Image (cartoon, rainbow, N blue to C red; front, top):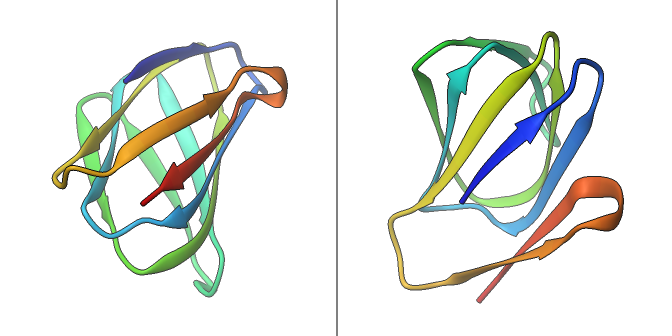
Length: 89
């Protein structure tokens, strides 16, 4: 799944995150994960592999294109309002 985010727009992922990779395809993203005291800045073509369960909030620091890749057969359900995603499985 690939989404365009405007500067300042948020994307939330939650649920079982193992097997999910977030790729900043263009622009830059600020990523905050539940249970992680560090924040991460992703730049163009930079991937980040997620693990465990929880919530991830991505904030576009500029206009950005984000790609969500799944390495398992679980499906991704997108809730368009609020740009939140729930990983089901």
